[in-house]
Image (cartoon, rainbow, N blue to C red; front, side, top):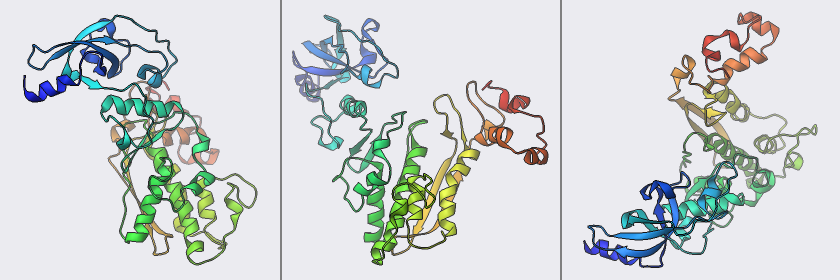
Length: 363
């Protein structure tokens, strides 16, 4: 056994609390399809090349990862005296206290199971955002969280520094906006994640915040007063509008909006119609990549916008997997076209079920 393995083995003395890799446990003690399970070290077997320990698996109820990340409510009982012999390479240390830090960098222990537990505990109380340094981690809540968004919440991040307020996508957008003005250099925000993680909605939230900053930049810098008519989420006619629309409407006392503002405002629904589709995991999955380039002047006001799309999943047009659909636009045309439009497109008396490519998935 190497000196490094001996040092590692010392961390897992009898009585130590650990996380153990679930796939290394015998099948009889695997209760959930999760990567890590809580355990307690009973004794060591330092006779192998890498060292082994005997562990007692701890299955808890509402504080275990299985309860945190379960998509359906399940009951997890407590199992006593379930033992297994595993290698130290599949073990990680843990503490009795649950960490709910806002920045993972401040965690007492930083490894995969500890990160998952922190994210899970925050998720349970609807704190879906967590920092890892300057990186923001977002866990899709799969439900509306109105208290996290809107003009009033945007205001709390106005002119703030990263880390002074609770983790939020607004904070990332504010940091980029301030850095652009202070450093006079272009800034980039990269949004990545698997299908259904919330990339499209997060991009919309960034655009909404930048639109709000766009609306406040000119009046503030020119010492002009702006009408608060739209800051409450309503237009002049009393109609409810999105925060993005409200930010653009509140830009100044001008009677007309610029074409650039209208184009930025209206681009997302159009792109989603032609590039988004229903998949098994996501009812509004983007099947293409998107690069949005917003250009601001020295006063922090949007001047031009450029949107580039790439890597469209073209095969979806002619081949749709079971329980999935083709692009939204095809169904929208069949369902929402007027009689004049149906005549123009030769769709009279036709529905989705009449088209082989659209009806092959039976959705």
